[in-house]
Amino acid sequence: MDPTPDSEDVVSERGTQTWRDEVLAWVTEATGLHPTGEVTQRHRAWSTVLRVPTAEGPVWVKEPCAGMAHEVGLHTLLARLAPDAVATPLAVAGRRLLLPDTGPSVRDTGTDPSAALTEALPRYARVQRAVAGHLEAMRALDVPDATPPALPARYAEAVATIGPATAPVAAWAEALDGTAPSTVDHQDLHAGNVLLDGRFADWGDAVLAHPFASLLVALGSLRRVLEVTPDDPAITRPRDAYLDVFADLAPHDELRALAETACRAAVIARALTWTRGPAADPRFADAPRETLAALGDPDWLAGT
Image 1: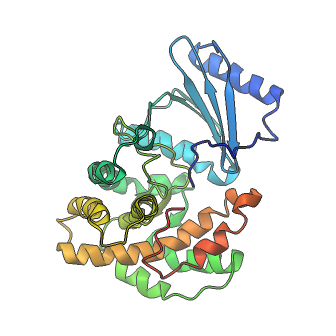
Image 2: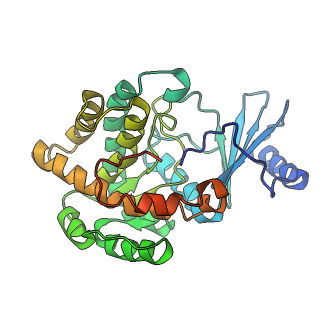
C-alpha cells in the first residue's frame, strides 16, 4: 500500500470542517504554529493526511485507520531507538501523528530506483538489526506478529478471513526460525517511502517478522517499475547489498535461500494487511484474495 496521494484520492467522510478545526486546534496547541495558507486533506482507506502550511514550513498530520493505529506508537518508538531512520514527531495524540516536512522521496526526484535501493536497503537493514532487541516493546504496541513462530497462526487467520490457500507454512516457519532475530518489517518499502534525506516514511503496514520478509515489497516494487526478471542485476544488486548486512549470520548463498523462503512466507502478512482497512475501499476489495493467491510463488513480488 502506497499512501502517496494521487488523482484517485477521495475525501474522508470523517473529514468534516468540525474535524479539521479540531485537528488544526490541536496542531496549534501542541506546537504554537498556525496555518498560514490552504490546508489540504487527502484520504485513503488506511489513513487521512493533512498538510498544514505554517510560517516555519509545512507540517503533516497523519491519522491511520483503526486497523493500522499501531503506526503512531511504532513511529514514535523508532524515532527514539533509531532517530536517523524516521522523522521525529512534533506531537502525538491517540491515533494522530504530527510530523515535520521531510522533503521529497526517491521516487519524487526521478532517481534511479535500483541505485537508490542499493544504497538504502543496507541502511534499513541496520535499523532492523538495531531495533530487534526491542521486539517485545513493538509487540506491546500491537504491531501485528508475523514472526516465524506466529506464521502458522497468521496463515490460519488468512485462510479463515480471506479464503482457501495451500502452502507448507509450518515448514517455512521452521526453516526461518532462529536464522535471524525477528524485527520490524516495514512491509511497504518502495522508492516512494525512501526519503531523499535517508529516512523512511509511512510505517502503517509494518509487522513483526523475519527481517528478510522486507524484500518482498522492496524488490517486488522494483521489478514492477523496471519490468525486469528476478535475476536482473537491477534486482540482485540491492538484494545482495541488503543481505551483506547479515553476512555474520550465514554464508551468502544460505542468506539468499532464506530470503526466498522469507518472501514466500511474507505474502501471508501482506494479504492480512489488506484486510486492516484498505479493503473498505471498493478499489481494493479483491486485494486480500489476490495477494493470498500468490502464496508460494517467489516470482510474484508484485509490490502492491
